[in-house]
Amino acid sequence: MSMLVWVMMAIAIWHFTIWLPDRFYGGIVGALLAAIAGSVLFGLAISGFTIPGRNDTHIGAALEAIPGSLIGLGASYAWGVLQERTTPRRA
Image (cartoon, rainbow, N blue to C red):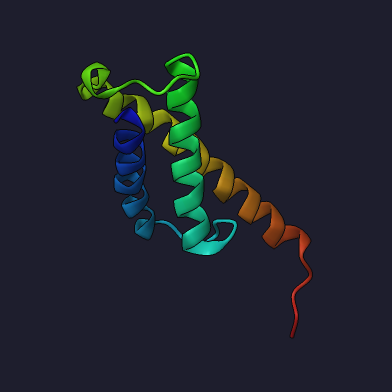
């Protein structure tokens, strides 16, 4: 059940990327996938690489996903900016 909470929180955080320039690696879909992957990996790392069940899920599970989602979005944005700088422009 915590996995669902982590993914839903990642989607909620991802919605705020409309306020940023679209420099994410893979565009807006890449940003969505990065946010989900970051929140799930961070949530798994916090919970000892196990998925807490329904009875172990609490409001803290939503808060656990926020740093992971932001890390994933930051990595995707940084990679996109790096790709933009190293790719030659076509006329």
